[in-house]
Length: 141
Image 1 (spheres, rainbow, N blue to C red):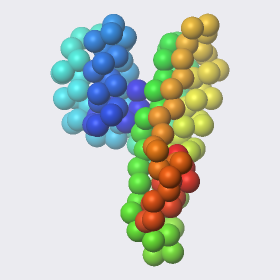
Image 2 (image 1 turned 60 degrees about the vertical axis):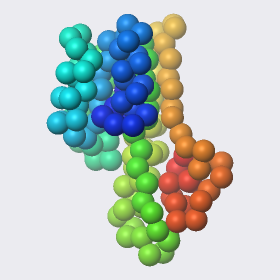
Image 3 (image 1 turned 90 degrees about the vertical axis):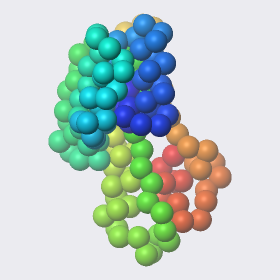
Image 4 (image 1 turned 180 degrees about the vertical axis):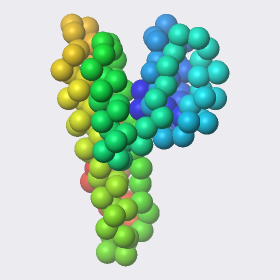
Protein backbone atom coordinates (compact mmCIF):
# COMPACT_ATOMS: atom_id res chain seq x y z
CA UNK A 1 0.00 0.00 0.00
CA UNK A 2 1.75 3.17 -1.16
CA UNK A 3 0.81 6.55 0.23
CA UNK A 4 -0.33 4.71 3.34
CA UNK A 5 0.46 7.26 6.03
CA UNK A 6 -2.48 9.64 5.49
CA UNK A 7 -5.81 10.18 3.77
CA UNK A 8 -7.20 7.57 1.40
CA UNK A 9 -4.05 5.45 1.70
CA UNK A 10 -4.33 5.23 5.47
CA UNK A 11 -8.03 4.38 5.20
CA UNK A 12 -7.22 1.63 2.68
CA UNK A 13 -4.46 0.25 4.90
CA UNK A 14 -6.69 0.06 7.98
CA UNK A 15 -9.55 -1.48 5.98
CA UNK A 16 -7.23 -4.09 4.44
CA UNK A 17 -5.80 -4.96 7.85
CA UNK A 18 -9.33 -5.30 9.25
CA UNK A 19 -10.14 -7.63 6.35
CA UNK A 20 -7.25 -9.90 7.30
CA UNK A 21 -4.52 -8.73 4.93
CA UNK A 22 -0.96 -8.42 6.17
CA UNK A 23 -0.28 -4.82 5.14
CA UNK A 24 3.08 -3.47 4.05
CA UNK A 25 2.65 0.30 4.25
CA UNK A 26 4.92 2.54 2.18
CA UNK A 27 5.22 6.30 2.67
CA UNK A 28 7.86 8.99 3.10
CA UNK A 29 7.41 9.78 6.79
CA UNK A 30 8.68 7.23 9.29
CA UNK A 31 6.80 8.87 12.17
CA UNK A 32 3.43 8.55 10.44
CA UNK A 33 4.22 4.97 9.44
CA UNK A 34 5.08 4.14 13.06
CA UNK A 35 1.72 5.57 14.16
CA UNK A 36 -0.04 3.47 11.52
CA UNK A 37 1.82 0.32 12.57
CA UNK A 38 0.79 0.92 16.18
CA UNK A 39 -2.83 1.27 15.04
CA UNK A 40 -2.75 -1.85 12.84
CA UNK A 41 -1.08 -4.03 15.45
CA UNK A 42 1.21 -7.03 14.94
CA UNK A 43 1.64 -8.84 11.64
CA UNK A 44 2.12 -5.74 9.46
CA UNK A 45 5.22 -4.08 8.05
CA UNK A 46 6.28 -0.73 6.71
CA UNK A 47 8.89 0.87 4.50
CA UNK A 48 9.82 4.55 4.70
CA UNK A 49 10.58 5.48 1.09
CA UNK A 50 10.13 8.55 -1.10
CA UNK A 51 8.80 7.10 -4.34
CA UNK A 52 9.72 10.28 -6.23
CA UNK A 53 13.40 9.39 -5.75
CA UNK A 54 15.35 6.63 -7.47
CA UNK A 55 16.45 5.22 -4.10
CA UNK A 56 12.94 5.06 -2.65
CA UNK A 57 11.52 3.58 -5.82
CA UNK A 58 14.27 0.96 -6.01
CA UNK A 59 13.81 -0.07 -2.37
CA UNK A 60 10.06 -0.45 -2.84
CA UNK A 61 10.40 -2.38 -6.10
CA UNK A 62 12.86 -4.72 -4.39
CA UNK A 63 10.34 -5.31 -1.60
CA UNK A 64 7.77 -6.22 -4.26
CA UNK A 65 10.03 -8.98 -5.55
CA UNK A 66 8.85 -10.88 -2.47
CA UNK A 67 5.43 -12.57 -2.80
CA UNK A 68 2.47 -10.22 -2.45
CA UNK A 69 -1.15 -10.79 -3.49
CA UNK A 70 -2.25 -7.14 -3.69
CA UNK A 71 -0.64 -3.85 -4.60
CA UNK A 72 -2.49 -0.57 -4.14
CA UNK A 73 -0.60 2.24 -5.89
CA UNK A 74 -1.99 5.27 -4.08
CA UNK A 75 0.94 7.66 -3.55
CA UNK A 76 0.64 10.92 -5.44
CA UNK A 77 1.42 14.62 -5.26
CA UNK A 78 0.22 17.82 -6.87
CA UNK A 79 1.83 21.20 -7.46
CA UNK A 80 -0.58 24.12 -7.59
CA UNK A 81 -0.04 27.06 -9.89
CA UNK A 82 0.34 28.03 -13.49
CA UNK A 83 2.52 25.63 -15.45
CA UNK A 84 4.96 28.27 -16.74
CA UNK A 85 5.30 29.78 -13.26
CA UNK A 86 5.90 26.45 -11.53
CA UNK A 87 9.54 25.38 -11.19
CA UNK A 88 10.30 22.63 -13.68
CA UNK A 89 11.78 20.40 -10.95
CA UNK A 90 8.48 20.52 -9.05
CA UNK A 91 6.54 19.43 -12.13
CA UNK A 92 9.05 16.66 -12.83
CA UNK A 93 8.67 15.41 -9.24
CA UNK A 94 4.90 15.13 -9.84
CA UNK A 95 5.57 13.22 -13.05
CA UNK A 96 8.05 10.89 -11.32
CA UNK A 97 5.71 10.00 -8.46
CA UNK A 98 2.39 9.95 -10.29
CA UNK A 99 3.67 8.09 -13.38
CA UNK A 100 7.15 6.59 -13.07
CA UNK A 101 6.49 5.13 -9.62
CA UNK A 102 3.15 3.63 -10.65
CA UNK A 103 4.63 1.96 -13.73
CA UNK A 104 7.75 0.75 -11.93
CA UNK A 105 5.87 -0.73 -8.98
CA UNK A 106 3.15 -2.28 -11.14
CA UNK A 107 5.86 -3.97 -13.22
CA UNK A 108 7.69 -5.26 -10.13
CA UNK A 109 4.44 -6.54 -8.61
CA UNK A 110 3.13 -8.23 -11.75
CA UNK A 111 6.48 -9.96 -12.33
CA UNK A 112 5.85 -12.04 -9.19
CA UNK A 113 2.04 -12.00 -9.02
CA UNK A 114 0.25 -15.29 -9.13
CA UNK A 115 -3.33 -16.27 -9.93
CA UNK A 116 -5.79 -14.32 -7.81
CA UNK A 117 -3.44 -11.41 -7.23
CA UNK A 118 -4.75 -7.89 -7.76
CA UNK A 119 -3.28 -4.53 -8.75
CA UNK A 120 -5.18 -1.33 -7.91
CA UNK A 121 -3.93 1.97 -9.33
CA UNK A 122 -5.64 4.91 -7.66
CA UNK A 123 -6.20 8.09 -9.63
CA UNK A 124 -8.01 11.39 -9.36
CA UNK A 125 -11.13 12.55 -11.13
CA UNK A 126 -8.99 15.49 -12.22
CA UNK A 127 -7.60 13.12 -14.83
CA UNK A 128 -11.01 13.39 -16.52
CA UNK A 129 -11.89 16.98 -15.60
CA UNK A 130 -8.67 19.01 -15.46
CA UNK A 131 -8.62 22.06 -13.22
CA UNK A 132 -6.66 25.25 -13.94
CA UNK A 133 -3.53 25.42 -11.81
CA UNK A 134 -3.23 21.62 -11.62
CA UNK A 135 -2.24 20.83 -15.20
CA UNK A 136 0.58 18.37 -14.52
CA UNK A 137 -1.34 16.65 -11.74
CA UNK A 138 -4.40 16.28 -14.00
CA UNK A 139 -2.27 14.96 -16.85
CA UNK A 140 -0.63 12.36 -14.61
CA UNK A 141 -3.88 10.90 -13.28
